[in-house]
Length: 129
Image 1 (cartoon, rainbow, N blue to C red):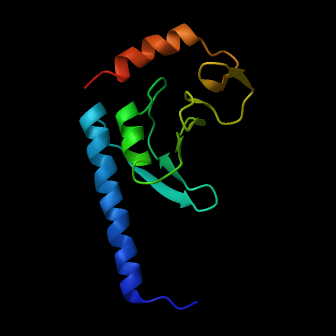
Image 2: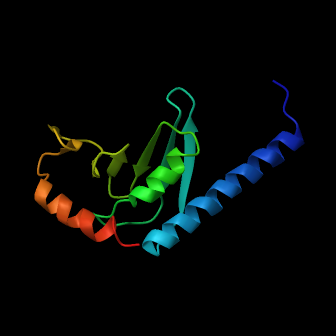
């Protein structure tokens, strides 16, 4: 495999542009400044964003943030948190290791998931703009 310095510099520039894009969205919608890293998976056209600082439950990214990332051309977003929770696509934040149950309105959730509490929390973060 042949790689050039120019390709590496271009890739670094694109990575920085995405970080600036996500930083602006996180601040605009949540006034959140946080360290994270990300990577993509070619096989399912997804992006995985891994936070390196604690963000307490029930925090979830605003729907407009999710939409803006998907509009870049990704099929799915995975969000990973330091407390061992994750968000897969549009499902609610849940434990990475389970146990999980399936909720017909929102997908896979933790065993102790409370839909009414989730909707109440959504009203505080989803319409905060």
